[in-house]
Amino acid sequence: MSAAELEAPDRWTRSLITPEGVDLRLQIASAGQRASAFLIDAAIMIGVMIGLTLLCLLATLGNHSKPALSAIGIVWLLGFFLLRNAYFISFELGPRGATPGKRSAGLRVAASNGEALTANAIFARNAMREIEVFLPLSFLAASSATGDPVQGWEAVLGLTWTGILLFFPLFNRDRLRVGDFVAGTWVVKAPRRALDVDLARDGRSPGPFVFTPDQAAAYGVKELQVLEDVLRRGDKRTLAAVADRIRGKIGWRSGPGETDTAFLAAYYAALRGRLEHRLLFGHRRRDKFDKA
Amino acid sequence: MAELVLKSRRFREEREDDWRRLQNLLGRVERNGAAKLSDDDLLAIPVLYRAALSSLSIARATSLDRALLDYLESLCARAYFVVYGVRSSYLERIAAFFATDWPLAVRRLWRETLAAFLILALGVVIGYLLVWNDPDWFYSFVPKALAGGRDPMASAETLREVLYSTQGRDMLSFFATFLFTHNFQVALLSFSLGFVFGAPTIFLQLTNGCMVGALFALYARQGLALPLGGWLMIHGVTELFAVTLASAAGLHLGWALVFPGDATRVDAMAAAGKRAGAVMFGVIVMLFVAGALEGVARQLVTLDIARYAIAAASGFLWLIYFYGARRRGARP
Image (cartoon, rainbow over all chains, first blue to last red; front, side, top):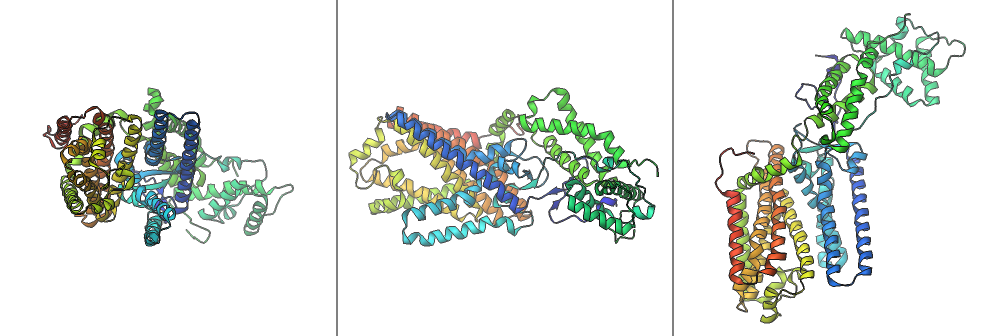
C-alpha cells in the first residue's frame, strides 16, 4: 500500500480510475454549488427571454401587417422553445460539459461510470428538468392566474411535487438530481487551477535560518499544509500568530531584523524537506501527534 | 546546513513546462474545439496527458505541496475528459444516429411502443363514444386553445371550412409553429413523467387519444368523419407516432424503475434513460416533420384521397425505417 492511500478519502471524493490505472479522485459538487449554478443559468435564460420579448415588441411597433406579425410570433415561439429545451443540452454537449452557470461555479457533468458522456445521456438528464422545474412552474402559473378554489389542492400537490424533486439531491450520497439518476451522470468539481508558486523555492531567502533535526521534526503533514495555506494567504496577523506559536514550540530565538514571513517560509521549506525525506522511506507522519 | 534542495522541487522544475503546455492546449480545445488545433498539438495532448498522470502518481507519493497536488489533480481530470470524451465529430454522430442508433433504440422499445399505442387507441374509443352520445363531453377533452372554434355549437359549414381552408396561410404557419412547440412539450412531459413509475405517462397518452376521439365524434355527428380523417391523418400519423414513442420512452423508464431485472435500480435506470434519450431525440425530428406536413402539405393538398395517400405513405415509411429488415451489424 502506498503512503498516499493511507489518507482517508472524505465524503465527497469519488474514485475514477483512468484506463492508465490512476485514480483521479473526483469531487462531487455540493448542493449549494449546484443551486448557485442553476440560479445563474436561470438568470441568463430569463434575461435572454426578456430581451427577446422586448425586441419582438419593438418589431411589432413598426409592422401591423399580418405576415409580419406572424413572422415575429414564430421567432418568439421558436426562441422560447430553443431557450427552454436547447440551452442546457447544447452547452453540456460541448467539450467542457457545462453551462455558463456550472462553469462559473467550477463544475461539469460527467458520466458516473467514467465513460464518455453521450448525447443521449445529456438529453435524458435535461429532459427531466421538464418535471423538475417547468411543470411546477406551470402549476404555479395556472393556479395564480385563475384563482379558482378548486385548483387550490392542485397547487398544494404541485408544491409538494416541487419540494420532493427540488430536494431530491439532498437525499442521496452523490447529490444526484432526478435527471442525473435517469441518465447515469453526476456533476463533479472541475476547477481550472493555475499552478501556484512553490513556496519551498521562495523559502530560499537570505537569512540565518538553520534548524536542528529536532526543530524540523516538530510537526506532521497536517500542520505543514496548514502552514502552506497561511503562507499563501499572507494575512499579516495570522502570520504573526502562527510564527509566534512555532517559535515557542521549537524554542527558536529570533535574530535581529527577522520577519515573520521569512521565518515561516524558511521553516516551511525545512519541515517539508524533512517530511518528504521520511516519506521516501515510507513514513508518512500525519500530524504532530503521529509518532511514526 | 547545506543549500536546501527538495526532491519535490526538482521534480516540479523538470516537468513544469510540459504541464503548462498541456494546460494551454486544453484551454484551446475547451474554447474552440479540437478542430482548430494543429496536428502536432493534437498528437501531443495524449502524450502530455499520460506524462501528467504519471506526475500525479509520483507527486502523490513523494510531494507534500498541497497546491501542486491540487493543480495536478485538476489538470489530469480536465485532460481525461478531453482525451476520453467525445471521439467523433458532430457530423459523424448525427449520421450514426440516423443510420443505427435511433431505429435500434426504437426497436428495443417495441413492447412499450405497442402498449402506448394500445392506450392511445383505447383513448380514441373512449373519447369517440362519450362525445358521440353526449357532445358536451367535448369540452372536457379538447382545450380551448387547440379547438380553434370547433366545438359542438359550430355548424357543419364552419367545421367543413376548417378542413379545406387555404386562406390566412400567414397565421397558419404561426399556428403550426405553436403546435410544434406545444406537441414537443407534451411529448417531453410524457417522457419525463415516466420517472414516476409511468402512471402519469399512461394518463397523458389516454388523454391524447380522447382528444382525437372527441374530435372525430364531433365531425362524425355532422357526417364529416371521412374528410376529417384525411385532414388529421396527413400529419397525424407522424405526430401520433411521435407522441406514442415519447410515451413508450416514458414507460421504459418507469418499467426500469419498477422491474430493474438483474441490474441495480440505479444502473437499470441509467441504461434505460440513455436508450429513451435516443428515442426522444428522434421524437423532435418526427414532430418537426409532422409540423411541416401540417403547415405546408395540408394547405397544398385538399383532395381527401391524396391526403389519405400521404398519410398511408408516411406511416409506411416510418414503419419500414424503424422495424424494416436491416443487414446484421450494418454500422457506418
